[in-house]
Length: 247
Ligand code: 13P
Image (spheres, rainbow, N blue to C red):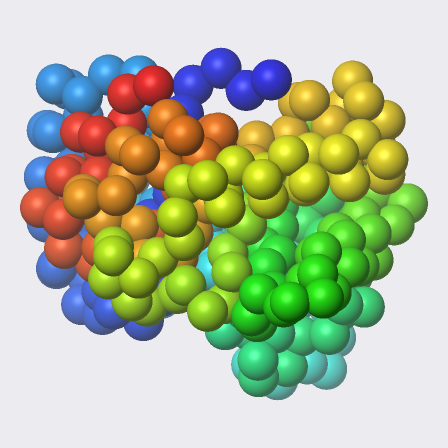
């Protein structure tokens, strides 16, 4: 099981200027000197990623292709060369515009080839009465991880229910519901990767995590950390979450 809590800032397209990004990172590094027990990674946009030093950075997306005629795409090798250590794969905002389960699988393979840690996002559109959201999550995991057993030691899974993204802390997932889902994901990972490897996978939660709900989600939800969107765009809001990261 993962030791330290992991919190990843997914800046999406919120932080746009290079100056703002650099100032944020400088401030964050100062704050981290007094906040212990939590590992912090940052996912800026492609144009900003190579400029950020002294903090673990990763990309928000990667091409399913290794090279060639793919206008607008960025390969895993290019990301690695630009300084990325990890990449977010299968985010619902990417699945909504282009990424199929098959593409997500290919991206995962490309990430592994380049030595990038994949942060695989899964999550249902909505909770259903008949429980079909469980099948949905299971299918996303199974198709992405097909034949990728060797990744287990490095893999991070971010559970992000689409219905809980971009709201406020009150409207996010409740801790009890989260705990049940984390157990389900761990069980599914055990079936796919084997029990020992499944225990090595960090399972994060994303979807309206803010300073107000972070601690409850962590303690009662049983996650190993967070993937934070809007509340990571402003340093003070992000630090408020990091301060709550005590189990
Ligand atoms: P919010 O924190 O804005 O809900 O976004 C979550 C998310 O999509 C992180 O990847």
